[in-house]
Image (tube, rainbow, N blue to C red; front, side, top):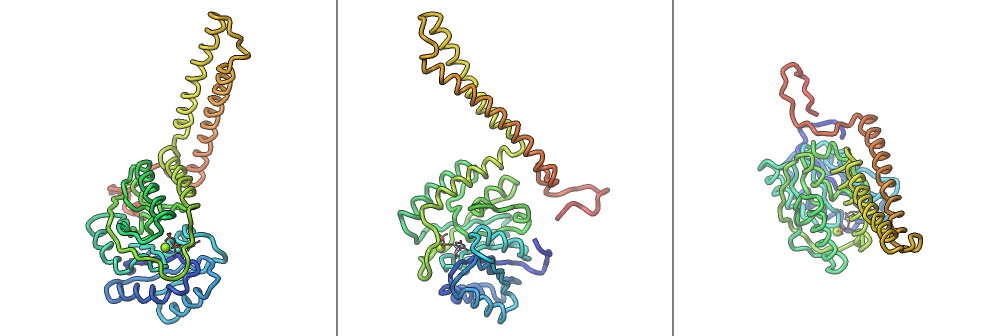
Length: 327
Ligand code: UDP
Ligand code: MG
């Protein structure tokens, strides 16, 4: 993150791709909701738009010093655009939102109010969603259920872009793939307090939706990655070892069965399918354990080369260390 400008209360981060019809109303709504109430900035991240979006953003920037614009050289995706916006944000609170007018800037004061009740992340919940039932609502319902179960962080709407984060929550997160939606889960694992707030959601009236069903599978893959990194990244041998233990146990049982069949009823070992299964399971066991050991090496390289501790310190009370470790 760039310099910590403590005057700046709020950074609104808007990733966008080809949204020229929506930008004027969006700009008016954001300034309308925030002007005179907060010390804020709007960071538009143009994710490689090929329509007139960038020219509009340039106009906003020229007429309003609160508007900052980042322009990607090509389309890198919504998560990358958000991540770039977070890096440049100077506000104490950072609020990402979509540029297609589906999120309502008028909800921002409510999110901030909730944050002030003592939370680190407030996540928007589009209780009444106006999107396509088959390609969006159904997969999203299932995805939210699966994500809540797997991450252990219960939210109704992981996919809602409109959320509010305290700056220090985002300082540590690195975003890849479709991962921006998992920030609340990552934050909660590091000890952040998470709240949910029902927000307004409107149908898209201009421009085209950028995603289809294909996103769901990517989200699931990212979920596996996030879960793995969150739970096992400091002890991968435990998960690979458990899998290896499982296959090893069955290899042993089937192996014993094959031998007893041979001894008791003279069953031909080489023609016995259980024999092949035993061999495959033995190989799998060796593979899993070796994979676990390799992963242990990688994890050590990762944490030690980047000086990344395996824990997160919130505060240090220590008179001999006046400089403190606060960021
Ligand atoms: N977007 C982006 N880069 C992309 C795809 C989408 O910056 O590669 C932006 C898009 O302009 C919009 C937001 O991400 O502001 C959400 O996209 P969309 O409305 O298509 O998807 P939804 O999440 O509503 O299904
Ligand atoms: Mg949308």
